[in-house]
Each structure stands twice: as structure tokens, then as C-alpha cells.
Length: 264
Image (cartoon, rainbow, N blue to C red; front, top):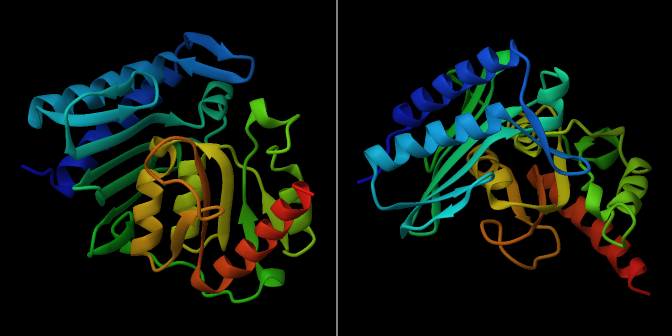
């Protein structure tokens, strides 16, 4: 038995209401590490979504940011990020997302990314396109890097390592109009899908960060792959590159060149 898109959209809408309601109160916040927070909303929304899945689809496997993997049938697998952009959420910056994806037989089937304060819901169904609040979306048609805006992010624990992403940021900043850092990988990917930006890359993400966004971009006509052609998008640590078809290969060439330089 598989979920319907409407079913997941309803769950995510309710989860967004929870996020907005909890944000009006004094947030209970704890540190997972120096720059990695978890709030009451993270745990409450994750528990809510897992309960919905386990009640309606008992036996499905669930991968969730805060509680990890809940064992089940690997042929039916969910990816949940209850609040992607927790630092933004905790500071009152309305740039965060609730991200839910479902895969059957290892293939992504449904993806939903909601930004509650902006009342934007991005969603996709395999083979049926990608949408924003009921309107179809497509990736940008921009062909040249110099006409492009990109998004990326920096993992705090990598800042003083060769995988910091800083050299990539500097190099691409010289090739494009601008590179932004907005703080939510899920929303970054949704913005690629709807053509607000041309491309996105980041290092050391997790499957729950990228699963829904991957389907969105693919269904919107874009390309998503591992950054260097290594590893997987839905397993382990994820280095990711996503863009429209024209910009993808140009970004990839530059990022591979920077990687080669760092290994000399």
C-alpha cells in the first residue's frame, strides 16, 4: 500500500501549523553541538509525522533527522526533516522548511517541502510534474553561469578542513552573478525547482535533507546528482549538485577542478 500526494500534503500542512504555533511561545532549545540546535518543534513535528506514517502504513521504513532510522520494509521508505533550517527557525528568520519524501523500491515517488511562514508548499509526484501552491513549476532556462544565481551552504564541523566548501564558494562567486547562503537545503532545492535560482551544491548533507528536493528538481526538468559522481543521494553522507540542464555541467566542471587543486 502506497500513500497519496494529498495524504502527505495534509500531514505537512498540519505539521506547518504546529511549527507556527510553537514559534509563538518560548521555544525549548538544546544544542546537539556548538552550531547545531534542536527545538521543541523539531521533535514534536517529527513524532507527529512518524505517528501518521506508522498508523497508516505500518511496516514502512522511516529515516528521520532527530530519531534516526525506524526499521521496516526497505521497499517502502520515508525521509523526514521536521525543521530544515532549525537555526533560522529558532532565531525567527522565516527561511525554514518541513520536508517529507516517500520512495518505493528505491525510487522517489512523492516529495513535499513546505515553508509555513511564507505559505509556500512545493510538491512533486514521480512522472506527474512539480508544483508550487497548485501551479506547475520548471527550472530556470538560463544557459550561462554569468547570468546565474546559485545557492550553497557550509557545514560548521567542516570549516577548518579541506572539505569546508569555502574554495568552491570563492571560485564560483567569480563565475556567476551571486552565490547565496540561505540556511535550508530543502528550500534551496525547491528554489532551483521553481527557477528562482539556477543551481545548488553542498557537502555532507543527509538523505532527509535532499530526498524531497531531488524529486522536485527532477520533475521540474532539472538534474540532481552526487557532487563528484560518488556515493548515493539517499544513503550516508551526501555531497550534492543540482541545477538546470545548461548550468549543471558547467558547475560540475568547476567543482571537479577545485577538488583536483585541493588534492595536489
